[in-house]
Image (cartoon, rainbow, N blue to C red; front, top):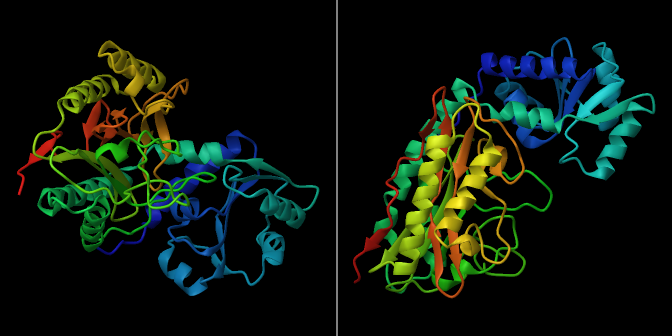
Length: 399
């Protein structure tokens, strides 16, 4: 599946929104350097820099590869830049001498921050614009929603093949590899971008049996043991056997805009204790579907999820065991961990265009895990489930 170029009308709309924000916070311009934000505002991912002035046309300055960037980006001003030292002089040629400059300080290394400060001189002050960018990207346009729908449809087709891939005696790693092959054959880009320092994620993970309940080293409810302490998440070589639950959690990414989805499988009977927990996960999901409307407070939805888990006597197993994560949902888009988040104390007001994944999950050491995950779009009246695969645990025949 070939990804088309981002239309000029879409890029212009994004640039104009950013410029309004720059004017509001009284910044002269923003210098965009992160790959995901470069793509969002320019439609390409070069080695280079995008300068968005508070007023005027943006300039994409490209070190590598200029010809490719000029082909992929619909921006009017795409210019070559043979040295980072010429960054400020190039901007000056176009009449820009920013004194207050916004940059993505949530992802910019300190070493690079000091280098940029040296390039622009002591008279310029670099300020953080990352929060504004993340809030803007959280509200998807019609174009972005269409691409997300396309991703969800393809992802369903891949998940529909999973029951036919599961065999007794295979390992969780082998099953994961077979699913990964199906994902790639369906056009999965292979990338799963995660914003933040030391945050890592593969396309997804298959977790089987009691090893699925291994404590996660990351800010996720499920992690698995993994194959090495160097990357402590995902399948670990556990053999798939009757009565051993299987959690399959994969990001769909076929055009840049992702969806997140988890389903449960089992050869033979799904353990009764996990089956009861799965019912509670469905209750949490239903509550979110009823309450996640424009104007709703995401933090209050999270608190209601905790009450449901506690009312079922499962508070100690909800969203992790021992050290649970403090969220039940996260935004998705060009990156996995976008806004909004349904999390403790983060009072985000939902609005049309927000897209987020909800993942109520329960962890039982020595037994396994139960739960599911779906991706939703906030509409004018409520939410629409984009990942439409049935929400059931699939009990598969043995042999």
